[in-house]
Image (cartoon, rainbow, N blue to C red; front, side, top):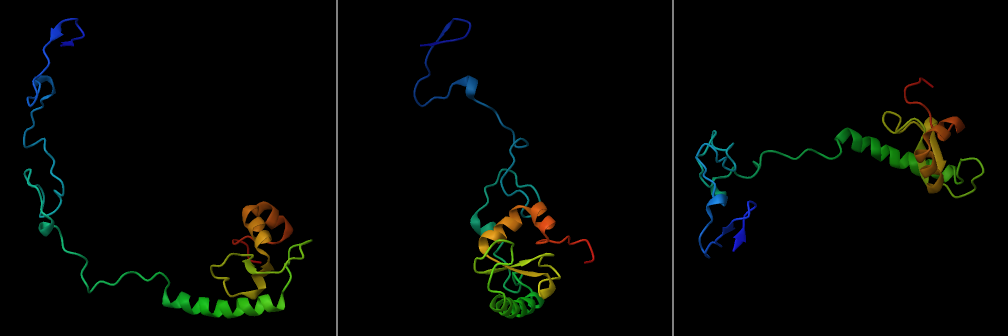
Length: 151
């Protein structure tokens, strides 16, 4: 037996039957079918089969390239310049650091200055992380430059 909030007892429903308070009536207007945006609008409660879904991407469509052809050319040039710069600048260029330089920091950012050696800075990985994580300090020391100014 169940006890209602008002204190009256209520009989336990038998197995296999649904109790009336939990039964909810739906009309066709209340049902919102899945994938109703396919086949021109509403589908009155119809279950859509996988065969009715739109086909896979047309083979004539090509995926967007991750790197454009122009950028591939720029990166090829950069790889050569980077290697040459690190050969000629073997020690980290940050003050009081005598570690081997392993990376190039672009003082004005990579964008249009990717291959401009005037803005290269050969640094070790630890100093590069410090420059990136503390931009105010890096700008005050001259390791980073404003991208907006015409230096």
